[in-house]
Length: 110
Length: 110
DNA sequence: CGGTATCCCTAGCGATACTG
DNA sequence: CAGTATCGCTAGGGATACCG
Image (cartoon, rainbow over all chains, first blue to last red):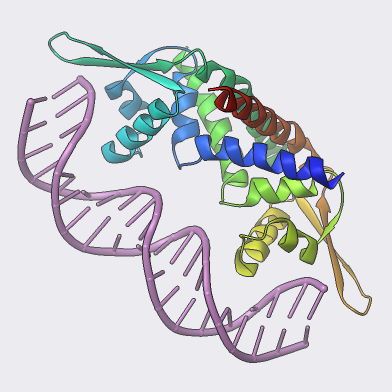
């Protein structure tokens, strides 16, 4: 069934287009459970530069995966969280995480 | 439970280290169901260059995800397929594919 | 057929400094 | 605090030609 394979390929590519980018999956992982502020994300992913962090956040926002909410307090506060739609990605993130866990177990045994 | 989150992060990163690289997930997707030859993969992924194809195949081979089998025929034949271990990745690939399918559905509706 | 080797380029990323 | 703006680099990838 070559037709089906071709179609599946398109699906995979579609997901990769959204999740592609060096840091996106990692950022989403951190947002998985609760709203996080910009500064919290920076601390959670120390290797990322501010430029990359904001860039990837923007792209995720534009793709409808996350919300950006500004609390007009002083000092300024911005919270990032999954949209309802973005939450559909959580099983995918879970799958990636689970496999990594298994893989590490096996590697440590050897 | 910040401890748990940190651990999960490690797991995700581990998976990304294996699946990272522009073409790997796509290549694996094509190998999912059956052994494929080098030339078949080239046809299935026309945008990839030979260099990238062979490079990503080698990395997947080194990570123990796929097998490379040479059939000493004339003309030369080489088959790539999942290792038993590599097959544990299939649920991950499935998850990526499924999400892409849903995403496309929704986008086409709008 | 199934690769290597080489050269080259540019998008993506990093570092730094600055701003509302 | 939460970003922008700029500049510069380099590693990852593309094109092409050749090899066992």
